[in-house]
Each structure stands twice: as structure tokens, then as C-alpha cells.
Length: 269
Length: 282
Ligand SMILES: Nc1ncnc2c1ncn2[C@@H]1O[C@H](COP(=O)(O)OP(=O)(O)OP(=O)(O)O)[C@@H](O)[C@H]1O
Ligand SMILES: [Mg+2]
Image (cartoon, rainbow over all chains, first blue to last red; front, side, top):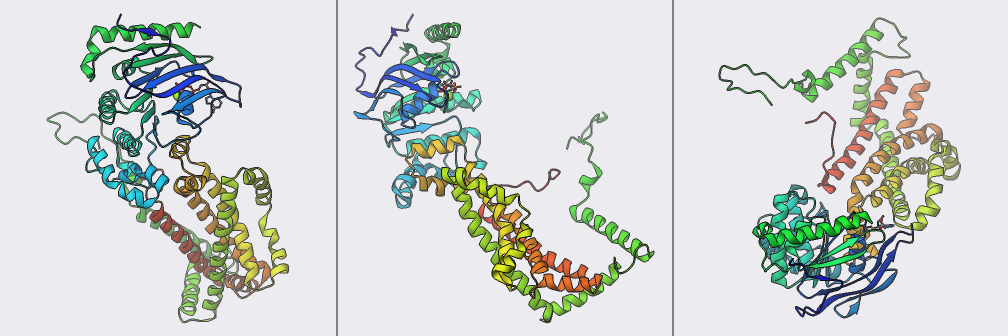
């Protein structure tokens, strides 16, 4: 079994800690649902981590707390040495829906974060960079197209560019490609891997697909529900860069099986 | 179309049937209805089934329309009356947009507006607003002010509702996205909520445009003055039915023009939002 079991990230000195979550809990005041209970997690620079777990086990809640969108009830979230107390510039976020604004062209959508933070002039100055990003994700020639003329995959690529334009240190991804078909999804995942390596970004991905989690990640955080907590953090020791071909190897299959068994156990509880 | 032309010796088993109405152009279908309408009208009046005082013949109406049209084109007294009504409509609509939009933002954007102001708006909206006409006359006199007020009063509510609904229409993801970008409340309103809500805002404006017309004319019926509504009232009191008919038709052109103006603006402004014209349009 190539999966090393560890309750917390053991001292793999692969990079300095970027995110440090200590004993984070969240109880929604509205309905007293305990969405997260005592979650501790460390993300290292340049690492790729996935979270997997049944629906309602608090994955999105965890992501929102990390992004500074909602405060935790208890616990600490430190990003690059500073506590997270609200939305931050060094965080890039992406959701299941591309959420492009139909009155803006693709490239205008991409520079929107700059426009919001630094004004119209800065956004104009960032256009060139937006063009480069679009080139990287294969959207050359679609700069001035409105979102309703983009396919689902193209729209998600546009929103990747929007996330990257501010050069965030960490990428928080909440099932970003689950609305896509399997083929485009595999492609987008490989794209994502490449971008993360190029920019040396730290990525944190919420997914429902064990395969997707394993092929992309250095570590897979397996969560169990009611209350949401970490069941186990599974290391993935496949070589990098990953290729889709690796999905056929026995090592890959072992890890997938192991995670599935963890998830099945979670269901029984 | 499922019709296959190269059916080498084989019968086509399934041919898409085109409903007859789908093969008729819109103008033809509309002309048909128009002709049926005029024909029935002619039949009913020509056979003397109704008294000419109640319903003039189409021809009499057309004659009067030509007369009124000449008066309007040559700058006769009717043009002055029409101009007064148009002014009431324009001022009333402008006022309704200003007040309706402001209230809509207050109600749609602030918790205070939604909690404390909206209930009153709903209460007033359920009242028969025309009943306020005598009050407006008492407060503002018999001149156009009282008509402008009534027209604006009627048109304001749909604009409030449209604006508030529009501001609420942005989805959770868009809100979260703006939050992650660190957008201020003002930026979120201007750059996201307002543009997202424009289709609903324009729906409110269109309903308002219809209401403003009704408000102006009702104001003239109940509060006198020298507008087009007064001409209609006088013609009706003289049992000059053809005149009433032709005045109403000219007046409806004004309403139509206002409605078209709003629709045109909507197409220009909300260019990304393709509105379905009809369920059967392909
Ligand atoms: N805004 C909220 N107010 C109250 N309860 C909430 C809120 N958001 C989530 N919850 C509750 O918290 C729990 C965790 O929700 P969360 O959205 O984090 O789950 P998830 O793991 O992302 O699920 P999924 O895989 O379906 O996206 C659920 O029981 C949910 O009902
Ligand atoms: Mg979720």
C-alpha cells in the first residue's frame, strides 16, 4: 500500500507552510448545524490538496472559512503568517459555476478583480496579461466574445484566468469542473496541474471524484459527516507531473480503493 | 426538418408536420384578425343591429380619424391638447422612474427598507390608486400638476417592485465572488446587482409605462384641464362616438410610442438578455 497514513501532515519538508488551520470548528447559528468540528490542517507551499467526503460534510464550509468569507466559530486560520479575517488578495477562488457576467466580454470578466481592487485604469493595464492567460488556457481569439457565446468548458477556463489574474498564492477550488463532461474535465484538470506548477501555487480542491482527487493531489483529505471532521489524510506518492495514463496503474487503483473504503466507513457512522 | 430528399427508393416514414399557422407570416396572421374585426364591426353596424350613437361604422370612424389627423398635423387645437397630455405622460414617467428606482434600491438593498418600508408600499399598492385623484386635484389644482402626480403615483409601484426584485436576482455565487474580490457594498451594487437586475427593472418600467398613460387620462377625466382626455370627455358628452373612437386610437399611438421607446432602450442597454417574444417563435 503506497498510501502513507497520517492524522496530520507529517514533517515532509517539501515546502514552508502556507495555510495553517488549527482546531477550526463551525456551528451555523441559524440552524445550529455543526458543519465542522475540530479541523486542523496544514498546506505547504506548492502542494496540491484535495478534500473529499459525502455531501453535507462541511467541505464548502471549510473552503469559505479558509477564504475569509465566513468566520469560524472556534479556531485559527493563518495564511502566509497573517490570520485570515476577511477576503484577501493572496486568495484566488473558483466555484462550480463559472459565474461570468454577461454584460462583460471574456477579457473584461478576467480583469474584473483588478477593476474592483485597483480601479479601471489598472484593469486596462492588466488587459495584456489577461490576453496572455487566455492564450495559456487555449482561449486565444475569444477575448472579445460575450459569455453566452462560450461553451461550458470555455467559460470555466475564463474563470480560471479570472482567478489567476491577481496572481494569488493559494487557489481555493470548490468543485470547479463538476459541471463539465468527463473528457473536458480531465483536460481541465491537467491544465490546472500545469498552471499550479508554473505559478508554484498552492491548491486546495473540493471534489466528489476520488479519481480526480488522487490524480491531482499530494494529499487527499477524507472527511466524514455529522459533524464534519477529518477522517484521515491520505498521501499520494505518484511521481510528478501526473498524466491521465497514471490512472491505469495499480498504485493509483490501490489508493482509490483505500479512499473508497474510508468513505464507506464514514457512511456507516 | 426531418424531410429526407435522397430516399433511394424508400418511402420516408416520418415527415415533420408543419402546423399551418407556423407557415403563415406574422403580418398575414395579424391582417387576418384585423379584417375579421373590421368585417364584424361593419356587419354589426351596417345591418343596424346597434344604434350609430353607441357604435359608429368603421367608415365614419375612419373619416373622423382623418379629420382629427388633419387637425393635429396643421397644428390645430387638438395638437395643443395632445401636447399637454404628452407632457403629463413624460413628466409623470420621469417622476415615477426617479422615485420608483430610489425606493426600489432602498427596499431591495437595505434591510431597513425591506423590513420597515416595503410593508407600507405593499399596503398602498393594494389600494385603488385612481381614488386618490380628487386629492391630487385638491392639493395641486386643475392644471397638469395633479395629472402628473396621479400618473407618477400609478407608475411608481411596478418600478419599485421591478427594481427590488432585480437587485435580489443576483445568485449566491456572484455574491460570493464579489466578496472574495474584496468588493465594497457600493461596487457590488453598481457593478453586479444593478446590471444583473436590469431585465426585471425594465419589466417594471414597461408596466409603469402603461400605467402612466392610464394615470394621465384618468387625471384629466376627473380633474378637467385642457388635455386629450378632456377632448374625449367632451366628445363623449356630446354623444360624438366616432370622435371618441378616433381620439382613443390616436392616444393609443402615444402609449405605444412610449412602450416602444422603453423596449428599444432595453434592447440597447440589456443587449445580453434575449427576451422571448412568443412561445411559438422558433
Ligand atoms: N449558510 C448556511 N446556514 C446554515 N447551515 C448551513 C449553511 N451552509 C451549509 N450549512 C450546513 O452545513 C453543513 C455542511 O454544508 P457544506 O455546504 O459545507 O457541505 P458540503 O460538504 O460542501 O456539501 P456538498 O458536497 O453537497 O457541496 C450542511 O449540513 C449544511 O446544511
Ligand atoms: Mg459544497
